[in-house]
Length: 370
Ligand code: NAD
Ligand code: DAU
Image (cartoon, rainbow, N blue to C red; front, side, top):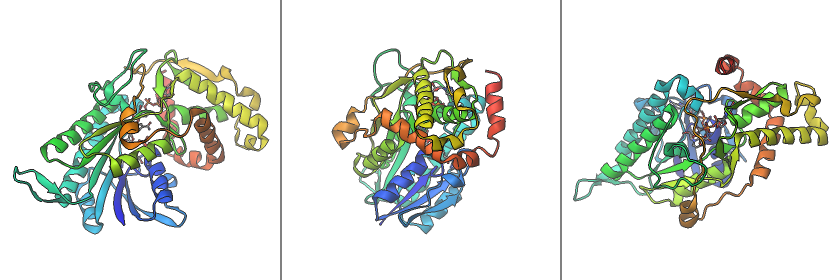
């Protein structure tokens, strides 16, 4: 039995990771540590799959005594750090919170793990580590900055973050890398492109667009809509992380991407087309519509003021994941987007629950000056 702490397991990717791990393994104990910010919700936590359960602990990754208590209570061998402030637009409004959680939270988790995992020293004075332990940092392609019309991010592309969010994630990566060098700390980092799929909080492009279409609201497209993102179905990302945690080399960075570049406007149009098609061919879905079917058209698209410092294009080269760990995305975008839209149509209760707090206030503020 291997015991994992999964931070941020009540958020989008963390919850999908918990679900994947419970469905795949019988010999893992999963402890979800999550502060339940606006992005983490009780309805998002995957408590059990096929009778297998996770343990949920509400708390902050910056809280040293709380994390220490978890290491004292459980034989933790793996930490997978998903917990973060993750939304670029919010980082432009309030950078400080991003620095606290994303940088200091990561450092705190590593410091506690160091204390519990070090078993001695080698002849040069480097710590030696308990067999089988691993810290995994879930990072992002945004640390590499922005691409022009051509080229891909590889693991050796210079770091060039441009938003407070990506600067905080880059800083966390640098702290992890510093611990790898200074203490030979057994850690890995993955840098992934844009995920989509179930449990994605409806402030991010795809779930926001789905929500607005169903309500007949305007679809805000930043700038000219031609910025490019490289989309990956969330389950493929979870499989990649699992491969890296189990078989990746400590001290390494791995890029994870879907080879699926799309302009934002293409995504918005495809989402409109897909929802319309599903409503026409499967009328049972119409019960979730809060608008007339005839309103679901490109007329909803509204070009709004651009995001400050908006990165133009991201595209990942995942060759290292393929060559070293035999990982490749399994879900095509065409399949993944339909699965995702169906999930939202069938889980409107979840959408209502996660948007019941301050969401409406956030939404109005965010879009009122665009
Ligand atoms: P999310 O915002 O949906 O979830 C983040 C979770 O972290 C939430 O459950 C929140 O409650 C929790 N959290 C926030 N601050 C915390 C704290 N101080 N202590 C404990 N828990 C806290 O984010 P996501 O989209 O699931 O992203 C997860 C990770 O993956 C992040 O580190 C993000 O940078 C990275 N990432 C995301 C994407 C993407 O497309 N979503 C792509 C690449 C990398
Ligand atoms: O690339 C990985 C990153 O992807 C992750 O590290 C981040 O945590 C994650 O949030 C995501 O960042 P983006 O900024 O790319 O995602 P977002 O969904 O916010 O925006 C996707 C694109 O759509 C981006 O070019 C901005 C644009 N957009 C977004 C929103 C919310 C719009 O045009 N309209 C919108 O309303």
